[in-house]
Image (cartoon, rainbow, N blue to C red):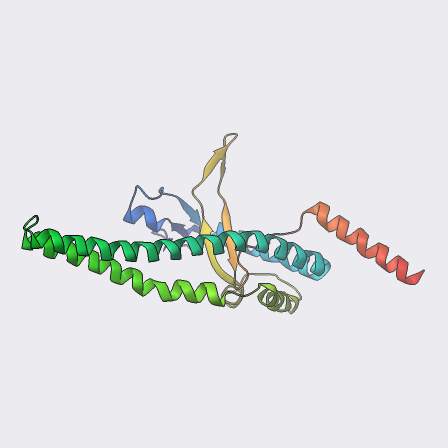
Length: 227
């Protein structure tokens, strides 16, 4: 998204607007969101994460790993499909170029047409081959989220109080923020914001019911130890 301020340059009126819409109106809608709203949402999210970690660390970690396993399986499956598709297309292009050569040799297509098409195919094949190493490296090097999640939790535990959102905190904890186009539910404007945390992506916060269950379990364990 692009960042913009109003003519009076007041920070509280600053906002972000969709860069994709400016480039291609068919790709996205002309949505925007005020900077103040983003900052408030990120701060509130970080406060809830802080509470989750400080009070329910084990249950919080368990839930992240549970969600991660499902999300990661889907992501890796999609990456494998992309890799397979790229390799298949590279092989197809070899055949297409050979067919072009044969058609040109028997005069079925002109030299100019042959040069244009073969150059286009060769460029596509070159781009696909250049992308293969990154795809293969990702699939080979992708590791379990356990270590990165524990590092994130350790960083969160160093925070004793979160009064405001500083540039240092954003840099340390936030990877990216995705602002979706607004929708209207029951006549009310609703706009979803996805916050991706460094090293761990989108985090699933514990529900009040899960917090209560974790608390009761903790109290039962304490009671059993003192009995």
